[in-house]
Length: 285
Image (cartoon, rainbow, N blue to C red; front, side, top):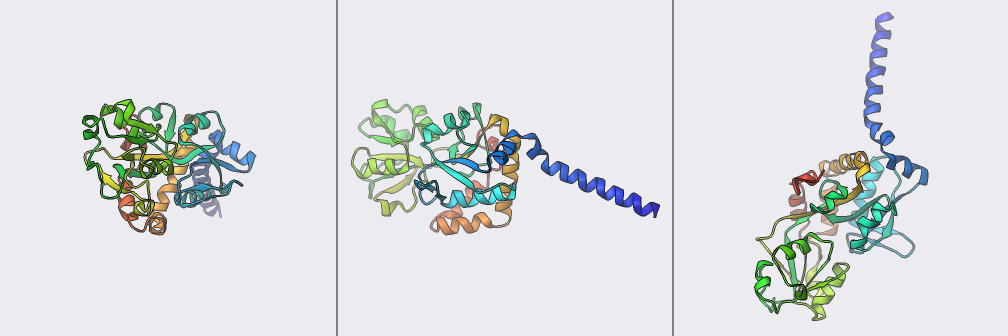
């Protein structure tokens, strides 16, 4: 009986230790307590169908919403409540506690990593130049644009692609800023610019939208991720743990087949090469 009691006690101690380790992030990270008190997870999302969209009533849908709800479920949290936000306003809104995290997928850059922490990359790709069908200006790369001052482009100001344009010394008069991908495509089809500069996979079914993509094969691979406040590192780590499970159990592969039937496998294979933000930008936490 005494030996059985000792074994039982040992088992109890081991299982209690395991439970304590698995829940330590939830008890130590204030974001868990804040979410449980509020009874909801407020998440900044952008308008980028079919990846994400938010209705006027706050209903969120799209591939980003589906996988993040799976992650939150694994963390023991309720489904997300989308907060429609412009890209450039996401980090300021996050830092002012307007939502719990920015889930739209922000570019992982050295500058951004000074103010927020990122999840493992949720999207990756090289730079795409979205142009009119047939590529009438014969564009092939960003590097050539600095030597062609007649070429006009549009870009999202907060993107890594804009940083790249600056490095390649494009003149300010060549650049038009847009709030999102839909507006960027519209500047091309409307004749205001010659190319919209963004990640190569950002615009789905480009032909249906009146453009085609030219991939700059000399550009670096850019990645985006979910952004959290720096004090939410343990929440980020718990989020990443559940997100990684979705890669291991095949959920993400089925999801990209549903939403990106043409190039989803290529997207996922490239994305899977990065398991943390520092794989993209070494200075990131």
